Length: 338
Image (tube, rainbow, N blue to C red; front, side, top):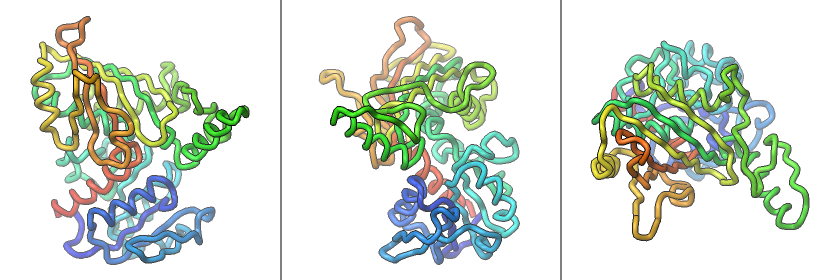
């Protein structure tokens, strides 16, 4: 899988929001690194970034960038991943890719370490990191599905600006201040202003009138859970939150599933935190999970329209568990399974 020694690691797209989070997590989790290479496009080349107190200069990615590299953590977008994937794998490195480029390739594993860690064994040089909303959803669905078979899932997402990158986060801050100052917020990064506003996800609409983001959730969840025929429908919405996604989930099982059992299972589930205070009407909020690893779940209740269904609410940090942390955890799996 990966050599039993400190590694040469390249971070492709190191200057973006996810790239910066990757660097923080590699240091925080003491990932065994001998040499670190920070790579990006010509637009970001020459920038300074710090890791473990030392200054690193971002290099423009080229054909020589991956020689001697053991692991590439890629967060530079699908077109960049497709362009460099063959160079990376031919160099002998393992690529963990955060884009959508390879997620639905049947030969490439799509992994959430708490859900399907066994999938990494089948990799041929590339492992795909799932979509952020999919990761959060699967962390909650998987432990419940291990007890009772899923029949149908309906999910509505409330997605933060961070899903569109650091520039969208900065724009939300700027446009919010403009509204407070009485100015008109004109968005340049997103199609509409998020300041005191929300809109349906701006990814391209498909022929079935679902957007690309909604179909990512559907198809990726089926692949991760190994339930290719799972009926799942998603509605994805952008909301004025900086970096944590929320989801409202309706889960139909083949038979009744008690709320108390669901509470117990999710309270014990790896990577999940239960926030449930019925007396105070206190359940997960984006502020509970910002900058934190676990996905918070709560307001687990019986669907009054269907005795076989449960309703629940979850929140998770999009940059962290929804992207960078999941990628680093995949890399850690490669170490333990070497």
